Image (tube, rainbow, N blue to C red; front, side, top):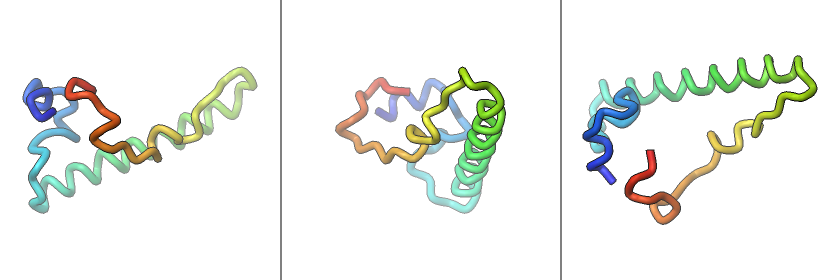
Length: 74
């Protein structure tokens, strides 16, 4: 739960989880954009090696629900 977020893990995404102000929304959008960029590069690099495998963005695209996560997932 939120008690884990207080540990400072992944502050760029998890800081102030209930905040919907412009700054917080912009910060989360920036993280989202960065992760998408990492995934694109990973796919490009992996395509150059026949032994390399990715999930094709499956984990990134999966929409978790609260029942699928433990209070200690991070």
